[in-house]
Amino acid sequence: MKNFMTREAMHRYDDIIDLPHHVSKVHPQMSLSDRAAQFAPFAALTGHHEAVEETARLTDEKAELDEDIKITLDQQLKEIQKHPGKSSPVSITYFVPDPNKMGGSYVTVSGCVKKIDEYEKYVLLTDGTFIPICDIAWIEQQ
Image 1 (cartoon, rainbow, N blue to C red):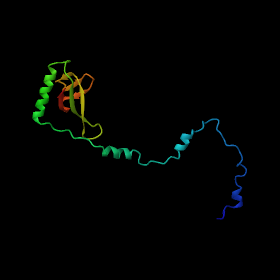
Image 2 (tube, rainbow, N blue to C red; image 1 turned 30 degrees about the vertical axis):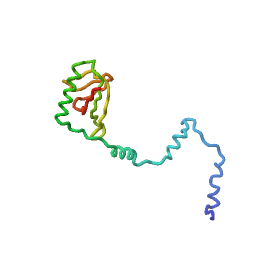
Image 3 (cartoon, rainbow, N blue to C red; image 1 turned 180 degrees about the horizontal axis):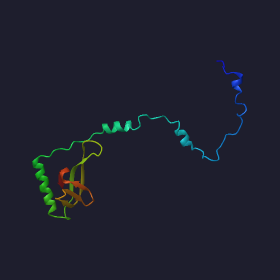
Image 4 (cartoon, one colour; image 1 turned 90 degrees about the vertical axis):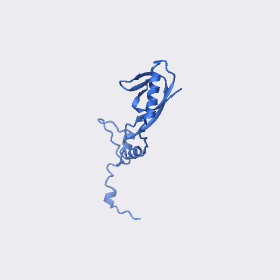
């Protein structure tokens, strides 16, 4: 393969080729990681992968409880409320709405009931877990 550069082009920088590299006294030198970031590949679809994963993530739909189960839950809560602060441990399964999309998931927690507020309609466990009564699907006394 022939070199097609002219003799003049080959010697154009001879006067500066051996000079020392300039280092600014005013501006700090760029770190190697910042310099490398200039040449990193450009991600035109930033966040696309995360959005696809979020869309693919499955959530449960909140089940509509029948009247028999609602009556049973109400009776259990009243029984627990008869003995405030002295209740035996319970496991409560309840629905937690997903903050990012429709649906949510069912979670089961175990502990002792600290308070049942019928006016505000929530159950508070001794560990601080706050459970809206309308989201409770099942209570199991242990």
